[in-house]
Image (cartoon, rainbow, N blue to C red):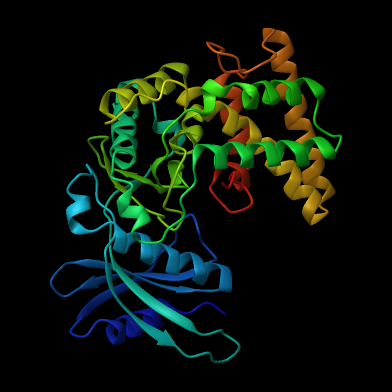
Length: 350
C-alpha cells in the first residue's frame, strides 16, 4: 500500500529539522510506482519533494542520483543554463503493515513543465534551448564525475557495448540481415568511434526536461545515470522530434554551444543508438520470455529494414541520412514507452 502524502510530509519534517510544512499533495512523475512521492509547500513558500523508494532497484537509483547531485556542486551548476535539484535531508523509514522500509529523501523542487515531444517544433524555440542545455552538460569537466567515483565509459567501451548488443541480436536469428549489415558497417567505421567521452546525463529523454512558458529549458531531472560516456546517447532520443527541421535545429544549436573539440560524427552515432533500441526491445522480450514483446520488436525491425531498402541506404556510412522518416521513428518509440522512456530495459546501457 502506498504511503499517503501526509505520511510523507511527516517523514520530511523528521528528515529536515525546522522544516515547517504548510501543505502537502501527492506528486507523480515518469517513474510513477517506483517511489511514493509528495510535493510539500513550506510556510515560507518554498517547495520540496520527498520520496521513498518502493523497491531495492529504486532505492539503488535514488542513492546513485544523490551521489550525482552531490558531484554537481554549486560551482559546477553555475556553468549550466538550467536548474537541478539539491539534496536537503533524509531519514530512515521503518517497515510496517507489509510496506517495506528504506529512506525518505527530501530535495528542493525544480520548477518547470514536463516536456512532450509534440512541443518540440521550430517555431517554439525549444529545439535551440534543448541543444544548448545538452551542450552545457557535455562541456562540464569530466573530473566532476571521475572524482565522485561514477562510471567512466571510453569510446572503445561504447563500441564494445554496441557490438555486444548486435551479437546477441544476431544470435536470435530475428534481425533482418540488411540491418545487421548496416550496423556492422557502423562498428567497422573507425571515424565513428574516434570521439572524446564527456560528462553525460545517461538517461536523457523528453521526460527529464522541464521548460517554462517562454519555451526555455529550466530544469533537468533524473540524474541517477550520470557518467562520463558517449554524448551521442544523450542526443539519440532527439531524433524522434516531430519534424526534421526540429532535429536539425537541436543538433545545430548543440554544435554551436558545445565547448571543446567538434564531434562531427555525433549525429550518426545517435542514429545508431536509436536503431539499436529496437534490438534492445527484442532482447528484453527474449530474456523475459514475453512473446508479445518479441513479436512487437520483430514488427518494428521489419518496418526499419523496409525503410532501408526503399531509401537504398544499406549502411550508416558517412553522409548517410536517417533511415526512417522522423514521424515513423516518433510513432514507433512513443508507442513503446519502455523503449523511449529511459527505463533500464529500454535504454542502450554502456
